[in-house]
Amino acid sequence: MLAMTDAAAQAISALTSQDGQSAAGLRFAVQQDEGEQAQLALAVAPAPEEGDQVLGTDNGATVFLAPQAAEFLDDKVLDVQQDEQGQLNFALSQQPEGFSPGQPES
Image (cartoon, rainbow, N blue to C red; front, side, top):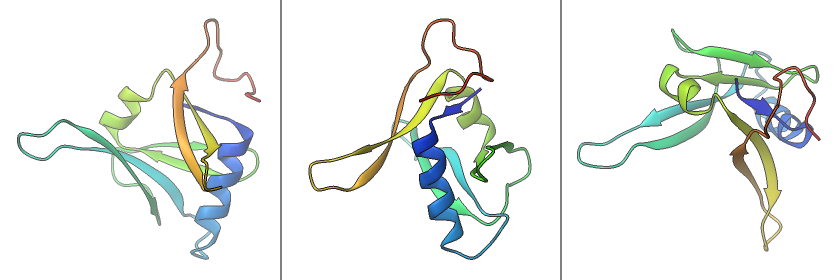
């Protein structure tokens, strides 16, 4: 199952609360155009779509995972990193060996 750092959860909460929709979340989906490699796409969504896996955190961050995205992200950790210009970007990394989904990330 996708895990989130506290920083990622806070960033998701900030993004989704801007729309003023309490049920909003960050939705991950796999997009593939004909003849191109599949890409992971994310967007703020007002609600999950049918078949989406819904993940929530104690601080109110909600993530919707389309079925293909859920499979791809099953062993990943979602984090936020700052680039040279000070912009925050979401980043994915492999979950550490022996990681348990209920274990908090730092």
